[in-house]
Length: 471
Length: 117
Image (tube, rainbow over all chains, first blue to last red; front, side, top):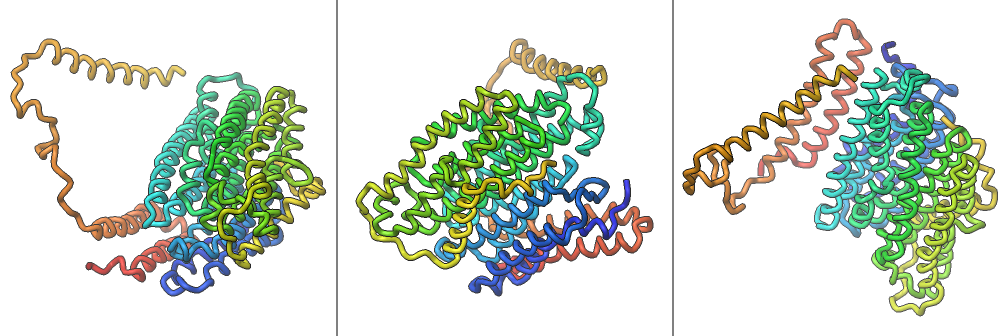
């Protein structure tokens, strides 16, 4: 193995920007608790990281650190997506930090470091670096969930999330060690070449199942979803938004690279495992979402169902399926951040479904925005949600997974009831509570960006195509 | 698969020995129970006590700070072993690593973690 050189560091420029900003904020933590410097720094670092991953990082397909880290179209796509969700989550949390008595600097440092972990996970070419990235992300998000030290609900959510996440890590590590036992390597290309042309092995099936289970915890796919509703409900809404958007995108990217590069020759077995996860996620989450009255729990179940839909593309496999999942992940990040954004903007009132009664009469603009995001989450044109669902279901049909595709469409109708219930509250009920305060500027900016992407994605879904490069 | 047979044998033997000890002693052993014998064994400690004793949280904080240096040492040791081969690049990398670890220490210091009060 070659020794790492300084040239390898250029592959990590986006991550280094985020880490650098995090270190500066940690050092200055005590002095910037009241100023908005942490927010500005985080947004600037996120934009710089996105710009760096597009323009600064060297040529396509370069790899470094002994073939453990790569930069290709796939990692670049997800790095920009993660940077976007970091910036949007930071903007959305600008006004709630003081209300919830959250230390500003520490909060932003954890957001930055979690994003660093996500970026490492999406650009790793080795199961061990993948694990490191995913763990960095998980550790930071656990602390973020429990960051309201004086709130028992937040502490409980963090403990639950910690216990389940550590269990998931153990499964993932066990899967990695079994994979190493079968193939003698943890490198994706090495695993693929070791598996080519050899028969099925029960140990290998166990290895793939464990790796898939470990990563399914991270994207919260049923039956590994139990942490998500509690963690989302206990966390403050911006943290829940960041979990739903960023960590799901990073988890999907990791599953995608593992499924399509490392275990490519075992695609049949792995897509059977993923099909089980996807089918269960879509059905179970859609049905449980029907009875939710807490908005954060409802959106948590929504995110579980969406994880199932996003997996459809990976089940189909091939470059087309990968692009479908990437499209889904991208549009999903923006529409879920938008929906959470409205929840955050409405404050206490936004956290229960009843709080939306008569919102259209009081704040027509906010209600219209929420309607756009609800339509997108359901998958109704002309929003990006429709385009995203269309491509994944299309790729499932093309790969002869017709029953799964039919199931996905049927459950889509079920979730329509979930989301339209909120629309009914907004437009067809009389207001019972006082009108909410005007939206803060930062939240408005974030909502504008997410709504714009949601609409543009629906009107010209092909505009994303040049960037959805399979691994 | 044959190389895993040893592990399987170990599991079976461990289960058999542990199971045999429990079953044999509970069926064949003589029983003269006293209050002391029936108490759960807890290394000589009183197994039941109300959680009245208080422990200052600052001990935990010190322990966590210790982990910072512990981890640092774990990474310093292998670096020191092949210090010559790694050369200037290794020295720079270690400097950066120590700097990052020290940022955490400075944060703790700055926020009063070292004040014993």
